[in-house]
Length: 344
Image 1 (cartoon, rainbow, N blue to C red):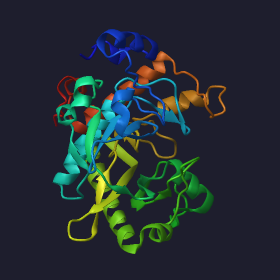
Image 2: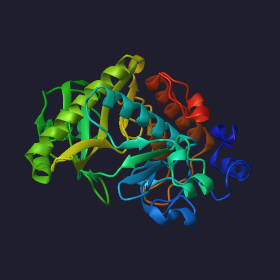
Image 3: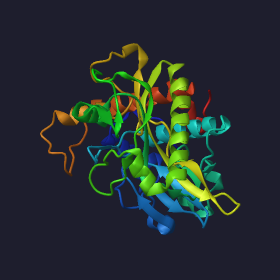
Image 4: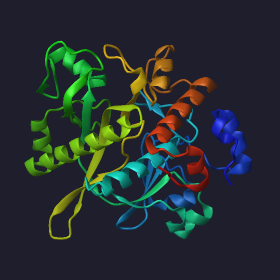
């Protein structure tokens, strides 16, 4: 049973609470590279990233579990953000369903019900409700699929240095956070170590081939336009976002692109409150910028180990993630926690 008090507790008190409300071995902080699940359930373990753990269920199905881990400056922090994994999964489920219904692109989601898992996971696993997606196996593209509607982040840095973003020239005189004339496809490398680097479309063609590169760009821009319009109706600006696309067999001897991983979440996107938007400066975001800002004020060199987050930063970050969930989906996050249901 899920403890109703853990949502507002810090990491240390939450761990104590979990001993009575959850299996004693459960630790959603986890460590990248190691399975979050106990050894008897980890036989299908493939890998653990900064946030998600990936397991093989069988030859065609994967289990994707979102933890409460949070990273900043490419370092996973020692302090989890309560329910962050559920926010990411719930928002992704919302967008997967909406973009598929809109006919933009199919996706990898096969199910989200823990009862559909193999018996070992159902009977001995942790409370995975709201955190899991059972997914179709795909071959991820070796590039980050990024779309920008506003000039911010690394795009702003590129523009200040070169007057362009990913090889796309922009008008002179733009300011930080300015809205662009139209969304830009601005891909980057996928760095195993260190930071991703922005690349131009010709580099993407070299990696993927022209047909797949063109289709990936078409899908990404359509997804951004759909998401930005939906967010705008709810008083939110989708400044930029990153998608993951993968290839699957199309059943007739070829390959097709599908949407995978996560979609338009606070971890993969910059969401700004439209009421507070003011070009010419950085904008407050519904994401982990609150954490980054606190870390910038600490005597830390941005290498492991990272400092422990104080309670007010943990609670403030959780509140921002939950607000993003509720404003975008139009549903109650508390109901999602109770019933694994997204209303809109």
